Length: 320
Image: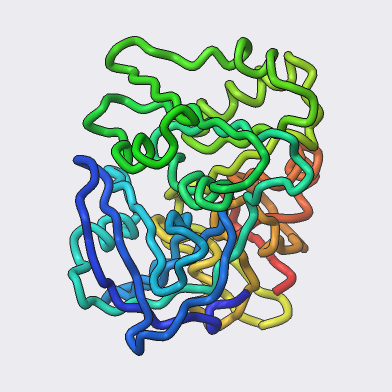
């Protein structure tokens, strides 16, 4: 996928579902069916402001059977680089946007004998479409949803109405916590676990799964990194013969695209590895913020994920 492959959509409805989260319904301006997707998919939303273009990934939470529209939810981030503020402050019903075609990096395993879903906060979003995929099926499933309080529990009424005994809610405000070790230690053979939420939340689930002896092939997680800001640095693109400056509040990928160089991507969140770029020279430090490269690959300094990672260097050359 590249920046040129987009679908035109119009904002059909907006709902404030929690003090921090807005729910958007997107549809074709011509009334056409949107591309098919499966539970766990996301789209890249292209937000064209006056000064810059934001491209952020958001999970699709609508029923995959309904292609008349897509639904996404966006949490307003205090330290946003501009994307979440654009979605919350600039969009109105009737606003036009562009989105990339759906991509699924967090799909349900087809051979699982049970699906165990664990969500923290805004991490509930990919599970909403997955649950729709599971309705009427024969594979058992359950969802454990940890959230700050009832006020901040996005789509709580929808979950309780449709899932009933399948969903378990935990409120931090009432000192309710998920017993990850207890939960993971009593699952039947063939269960797959899926987790989405803040980094620390995901880390605790992964640690518990390792401690309980779970096979890595049965543990699935998704966390799109919010690209951090950092010092301004310069980059030379060897094949394109261009020198670019990466601003403090821009990603390396955004700066490359602004220079007219196309880099393939699927997630723009440090997950998929699709934008992986070869480092030819670097006289400083590569700042890796992705979830794809191994520790050894990061230490080797030969590759970088420009969607989220940066550099602290005077001379950085990429094979682009």
